[in-house]
Image (cartoon, rainbow, N blue to C red; front, side, top):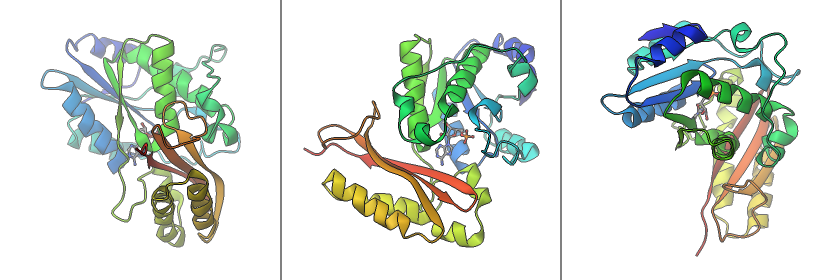
Length: 278
Ligand code: AMP
């Protein structure tokens, strides 16, 4: 497995890949959810293709009061997981190589980024889109994989690729859950044992609510159940159209029920499908 620590090393290795190159962008602190993405990438790459995992804790997607410095960075463990999953190359750029001190160009999206997490994390999606676009331009993948756990991010990246005619395919990967239903996340490491024990109630609240036919009733039920989790503060609970992320007004088209909940030091997000009803 190659470890590529500079942009020029990455570009050099890219030149040696003649078949598919599947990119899995991550911020490290890899867990079973990332492993699921890598396995999907491996399948998509096929026998002659290659899988590259990027590990970069992108400073520009963290707000001033967010957890950039505290974000876990267990590099040796991350490399071991990549090796075990037969990753071909890991791209580990330095922030100073990714962002020159006078960098002045960023990507801005004006619709899908204005809802859900975009409301409470100002500038977050501009940081995400800018770094993902840079990673695409540096690594030139034929395919890239993103998790459905971050549904808004996945929808935004699809929109960016569509609107900017980027020449690659985006694949989504279903949310990997712990046996008790909690969506795997690097931020679960911030939870105390009591918070960790309560956290699966986010998923169970969403599931119970999604079983109701009426959207307002589902939102009421989910909010009530989320607010009943001890120590939890609900940032949002919303039903949105699965692709435009606009408010879901009826059950004629596919939707998502999405929530963000502060639990202790962690801000946890989750979402599940609200299938169209016939
Ligand atoms: P992160 O390292 O948190 O930025 O995540 C890197 C990629 O892994 C993103 O595409 C996430 O959506 C995806 N991901 C993180 N957690 C999960 C999970 N539990 N299931 C599926 N994908 C995930």
